[in-house]
Length: 300
Image 1: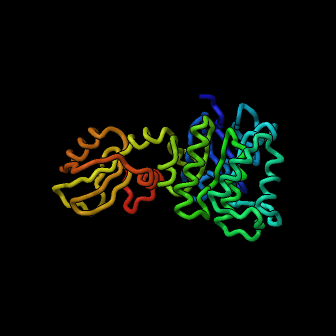
Image 2: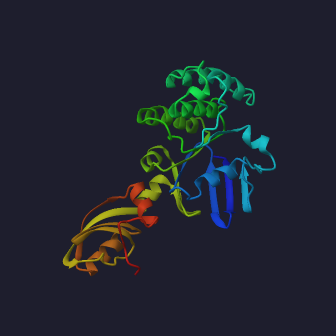
Image 3: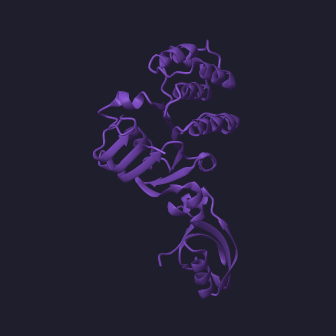
């Protein structure tokens, strides 16, 4: 698979605030990449650098082996972008928006655009300013994907879409792009959506990449275990490889990384036993790594 995106040690500040801090990110063809993080984590700032909307202050950004700032036509002609703001010309009708967008893309697939309009039940004669938030999101999504871009960049694509559209149509579009050998990069605060749709996940927190990898590998690297102790603990007991704990007294639920055997030994040394374990969900990993557990573990 060819490399589509190469970001190396990218940093960016706005008014003295560090939005990106030494971020490296890579994307290959035929894969779906999910960016996870709270508001202000740096996801949108990273995506805007990929499209040449922001210039790298330090580090480097290459898309299709091009600098997106120096060669915007070379990058944008092969990329589709859905922004979180859904900025569309208010005065246009939906069909005019499609023709307008088509003029910039020789690869525009008119039949695919019509099929998507029908799937979303969008009225081509309606003006953009008359569309609801959800309809506006649907129109913007069609404009982003109908020219079948080699790289599809989606910033919070589910914003404004109801659950049925999110799960059925959005999932189908994203999967079709990847199955065609093209690349999708999307950011979302909906962790179940990222877990459902992504091949690869990158967790960002306060402008930094906290973890990044193939989704299945990331999940296998973290477990959630239920632990029972003989002793009663008022505060979370310190355990090796534990990232976050919830519970109280003798029974605790622990999100931990590393070897399950190592964790078992640590629990045993504190007079406890592991009752059961399973792979942690992406949401549990995110909350543990971002330090948002309700009862954080004391430093060892």
